[in-house]
Image (cartoon, rainbow over all chains, first blue to last red; front, side, top):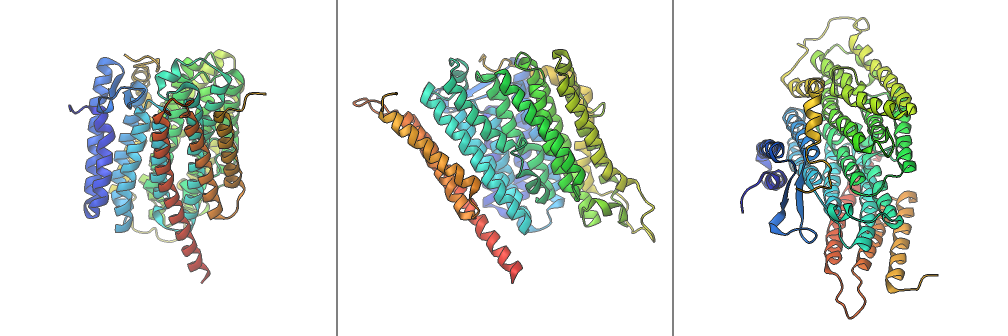
Length: 480
Length: 99
């Protein structure tokens, strides 16, 4: 069999995970190697997609509906690239952040398994495979959540596990109903299906499962504790990448299946608005830095759903691009932010926001990184977050849906407010009396988060090529 | 009233089993009970897939859903194992704190 990039993207991390598990002493080397190979494969794939539009491979030569096909188009490759780059930099910082041998030993197999699942979701073309992949992601993500081994982390991990499995099972139930009606599960079959009430009900089940997994308000209850109590690299992966898998499936399904009726879209937008407001208030109240960052993820997820709903049913052909931009922007920026928060916690020794300005150690570069990431998440120009938010509001204004603009504005103000709580601590020196401890303000470990934060800002300047890349191979249903 | 075909009976049973599991997963306090409730959910979802395989005899049943159910069972076994391991770990951590 000829080696092709699609297969490589899926199997490099899978074999890497197995190898890292079998050779625990070489886990870090194997892990980094596998992530690098994956990055290379994504580049290769991006070239092919640029040249030819969507690329499809039937695994083992079996064509759907019986076999499993992988398909890569612009959106899939953009997500793959975001995942690979974020993953590479998080991997680099994990070398420093995870100091216990035990944590290193388990981090790499789990993270590579997670990468396998993520890539599988991006490339999957039938709903049952997506179910298997989200379960793989769930198991790996729970493992990463409890990596620190503290009681709070294990407790949060268990809650996460319950929510995640329930979400996946709701999805599976929906898959069962789809098969009952259509007798096939591949996207092509879904795309050509006649819209019916029963099919919409099946889709609704799947969507509820996905909303639980992506933590859209009010199904977000498991997220803050799970993301706040994990170790820094794990938090970055969970918040930057894992929640995006379910979001991505939602984005795909909503274009493949005859879902969208106006009321449903408005409902989704309303839930998003709830997330923006409730998450914003909770972030204002959070006492710990990592908890604040976790609540900001709840807000951002809400924002992505508002972007999806911004112009109602007619606007869906454009709205998914705004949502995709926000997904990419949040993935990069939130990973940077969690890594920076982890660095600050490492240096200062705690992450109680109120006492950040009392520390004698000032991890200046990590604080700078945090601020840069916040610029993208708040949505200030020229960051990618700004472009995402701008296209959200532009679409909403064009469609005359001013309420979404208002909610986005309020959410932006709230995010400025809660991030300012942190910046105030960074900028005040007067609270600390006595000698400043010896610390040069930066460390090699700050490079990875800083790179991510700079990418989050500068990708905004490349918004036009990113947007035209996203459109490659669109509409999703068309197979070349 | 629709005719009571085997497919309908099994289908409704599947939904009922899933619903019982759902209530348990959302309402139960005990950690182990919630795991068991999730198992019930998976049985319900599997039921629906098995029903999808139903063909009126003498036609042979559709093998694809059977393969899917087996995959689902494997996934659920691993998930249960992870959940049980976490519960045990949490219990020993809590016992340490109490001691």
